[in-house]
Length: 167
Image (cartoon, rainbow, N blue to C red; front, side, top):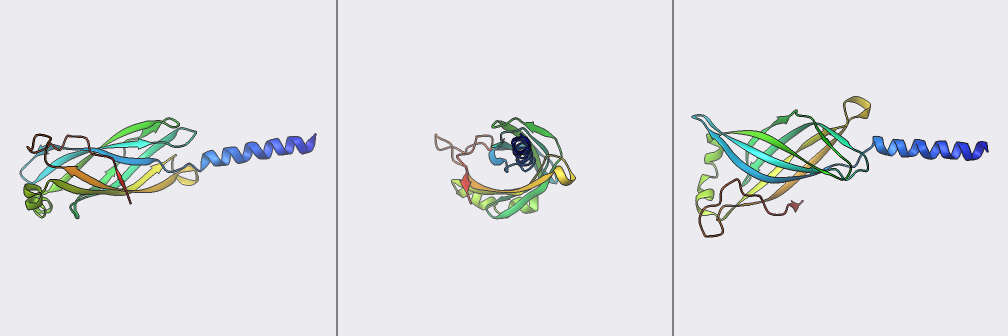
């Protein structure tokens, strides 16, 4: 009887430890929208879709990120908005990006003449709280933003991006 009770307690303890060590959420850049143009910079909004592959809910406490377009770093920063994502569910998070004109001019000619723009979004996601219960996961997602629309005209930044390319 004691052996069975000990085995049940050990199994319960191992299951709860697995819940404390979650699997990293999947991060995909779903859209990039030009939000505001000022005299000194351009504000963009990057729409992220996060998938929680775990059997328990995840609490995203913060995101640090860096965005590169055609190899040029155009923005970096952090989002501190908390987001709860249910088990095996999707959540969305909008990142506000500010880019200086000096950075944007480096690839301006490629935007004018190219059909697509390479992007790379890297960073870290803090989940589950701070200290011993918190976990930080790195992400790295790359792909292409189409610049030519379906009818041959320029495609708006607001169009959803194609499927992510894994690195």
